Image (cartoon, rainbow, N blue to C red; front, side, top):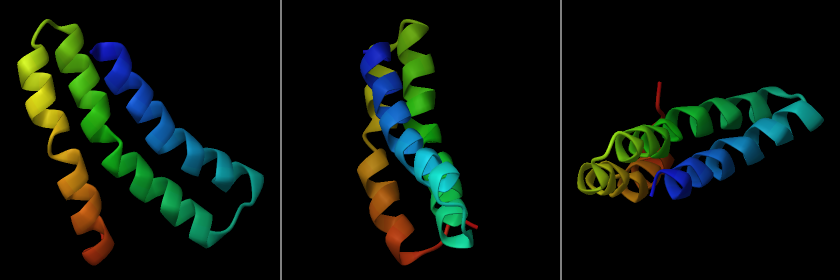
Length: 77
């Protein structure tokens, strides 16, 4: 479970970070920042799963789609 959540973090944050490095602009920097903030959820889930609490990790990870949906309506900052 920890590896799956870790992969979700890498995909969520990595794609936006790579875009910001390849094409530096305010828009890409903002998108990378937002992805980093949202990416904290799968990262925390990975750490929780690694500590031996997969059910708690799943509960934390379950809010990720909600946060992403709300993030489209309300900015993270």
